[in-house]
Length: 249
Ligand code: AMP
Image (cartoon, rainbow, N blue to C red; front, side):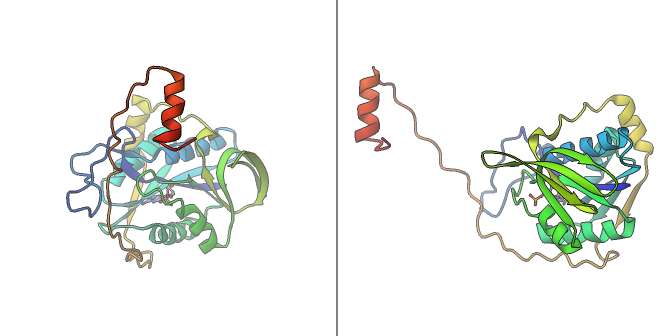
């Protein structure tokens, strides 16, 4: 079975983001970029499935600027066999990414897609669901455990207040949650090996996909600054102030 993993290049999760002064978006200039953490989990899961003989080939795909090639090299250092960069300078929204991924899925003839539940930059949580709908495939979102056989995937999902286990027919789209696995460290020898693995570049036009944005960002703002805290002498005063000033109890 051939698996596609989608990996997005995002601002590193350790970076405190800055909003542009005109409120038009986030300032990425000079900021450390990394693979979206949920996508690292997706690559790790695909590699584990390959190590257990369930998967024959892993193709990593990223859509965006040329620098996404670095993210794809990281995916190959974790264990993806090869990579496809869909290169564009255009701002990509989830629907456009889902259409691009659909085109690559069809071109490559894959039976399983594993991707993050959410990108930590736009927090959209849409691309996997849209891709499954566009392909007409089964979907299993927020996966915390995945078992695959030839015809189906048994997926445990993180839902409000517990876990749900479902069986979906293949082909399917699976999106990863935090507890699915702990991605391995990328070792130097594997980084060196990844440099030699094949990375193909395609343009959205070659895939016949119109990536023009459908949504317009009106404003991006930082969260309001929190006021300073106060010290209270005892529990009785705390309770009184929570009742009379904060009015939360
Ligand atoms: P989102 O719907 O934007 O929260 O993203 C959900 C998942 O879709 C991510 O975790 C990635 O696996 C995938 N994805 C989103 N954007 C891209 C992109 N530009 N290139 C590759 N994969 C992407």
